[in-house]
Image (tube, helix red, strand yellow):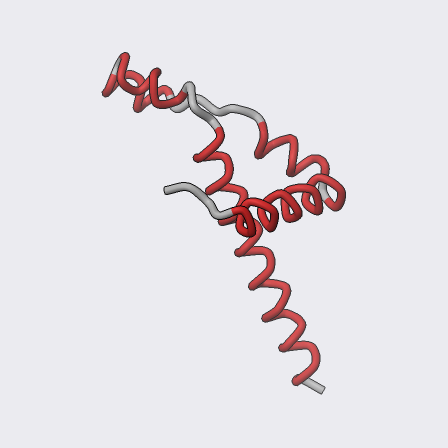
Length: 83
C-alpha cells in the first residue's frame, strides 16, 4: 500500500524532526538490521525480503513516533490535571 503525497510529506516532516531532536535514535532506526533466526528458517526468501529496507523502516519509525507522541500527551494531561 503506497502513501498519498500528503502522508508522504507528513512522514518526511516527522523523520526530519526525529533526526533533529534525537539523532542517536534516528541513526539507530535508520541502520539496517538482520534477523538471523528468520534467515535460518526461511533462507533465500528472507534475504530477498530484507534487501528492501524502506517500508519496514518507515513502519518502525511511525510506530515509535506514535508511541512517543501518545506517551507525551498522556504525561502532559496527567501533569496538568494532577494539581
